[in-house]
Length: 71
Image 1: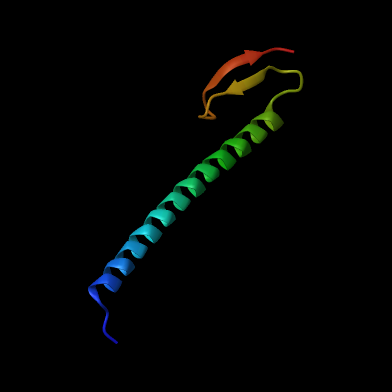
Image 2 (image 1 turned 60 degrees about the vertical axis):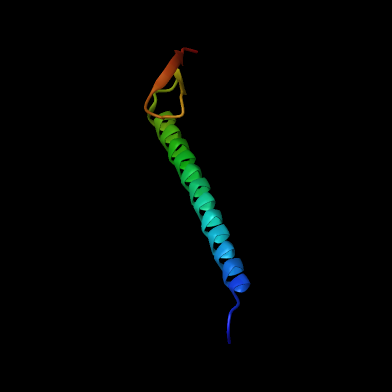
């Protein structure tokens, strides 16, 4: 079976497109994993915080509290 230059070019474009799609999917998965880790961290912090203690509001990075509000 012989491939024409046009078929080869189409296959190369398809491969490039698939590679880009996989890269974008990996970025989304990485972002989702980061958010899950942040949520896990916040849940652990709330479980360890004494009842009636300050409520912490966090930036995107879970280890940097921005503000504390006492109830």
